[in-house]
Length: 193
Image (cartoon, rainbow, N blue to C red; front, side, top):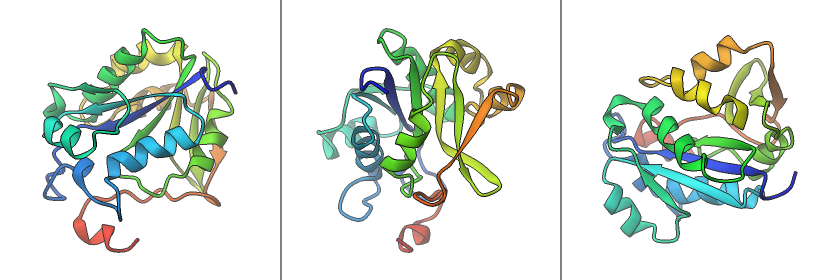
């Protein structure tokens, strides 16, 4: 996999209502979750990463000035799907053949997990991390699928419906030995690190 072939995409636009604050602003443990996600993609070899912000975007930018390029989802309240659409649109003008998607609230996804999934990068690829019987992030979306994903990404479903509709081509890459699929919905979960 050439570094310029696969882009990283961090979805970090939500307000984190159950958490009590935007998860992009949560310190975990010494850097913000949004920085951790962007660093994970960089360390995995994604030379180009875009971070989608929304709720309190300027506060996030001020707290994390070292982030890679950010784009603003002005419709962030409608759910994750709109952030995925905004992120894929931002990557459309790049030479990337695929995008690895990470959610800001999944701090246990590692660079090794991203590398394993990104190793399948090609325009027609669809892949997900596998945690035993569960499927999860990182998710790889080949460029040929971006328009279809964008059409079906609504509410908080993101790429879920598209991946289900194309289950026959989705490759599941075992990553449970090097990563975790825990997502942080409540502050007490962050204390379990």
